[in-house]
Image (cartoon, rainbow, N blue to C red):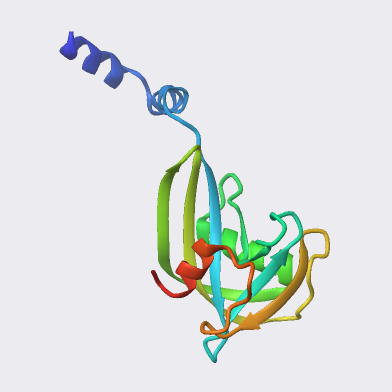
Length: 148
């Protein structure tokens, strides 16, 4: 039986194999977060309009679009939410297992751009030193900032 299954699998062309795999396995949404710092080591935090009251401060975050690299997601999200340009650095965090979501975080350094906030999603954008983070910051984001 195993040999027959292996022969059948090999007989399926590449695109058909991919379709079978796609149908068989879970689909995940990928949330990507940027730990954006300036040259002085300050971290960019945003007060998100749609996040729970009292826990609205957090790092720039968004979902990866189909066909988009996670690094490109950071660049796009920071530009859309703040008008700033960033260079993406090292992978800082990768976690799965929360329902159908994968969480990815990268270090990033601001490189330019004209500061402006997307008032639909963002109430405020500010730079904070890592030792003076605001009340209402997502605890997971506090841990990312401190490399924990």
